[in-house]
Image 1 (cartoon, rainbow, N blue to C red):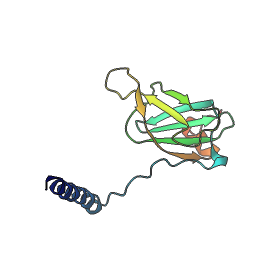
Image 2 (image 1 turned 90 degrees about the vertical axis):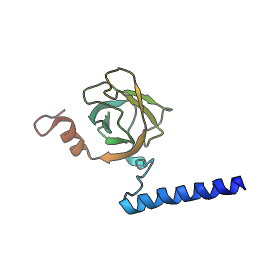
Image 3 (image 1 turned 180 degrees about the horizontal axis):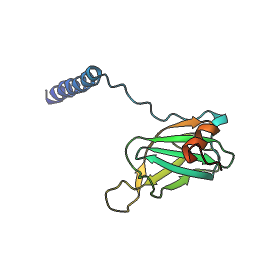
Length: 137
């Protein structure tokens, strides 16, 4: 009798949570979006810039660039980040690189960043984001 009661209570709780998402209009965020093979970045990366606590701009030696979107705040602007590459292949998605940063809590302890998605950028847009309109690399 008890297992059935717990199953009914658990199902009701799940339906309530689902109904809350539907009524608020929150769509689930896409997880693990990767770059197409021709848009992947080569390692090691040439340049990176933390744009905000959720977003990292990266560019490889050939000038290909992408935005790495994190699932939660894990970096600070003007603070160092740690990047660990997996294998020797290209960086196409969340599983190809491990990123850590600091979260601004006053302690300098690396905080793991969970990459949610990677968005490709044109060379011109990346140039603008890195240097603005007045400077060229």
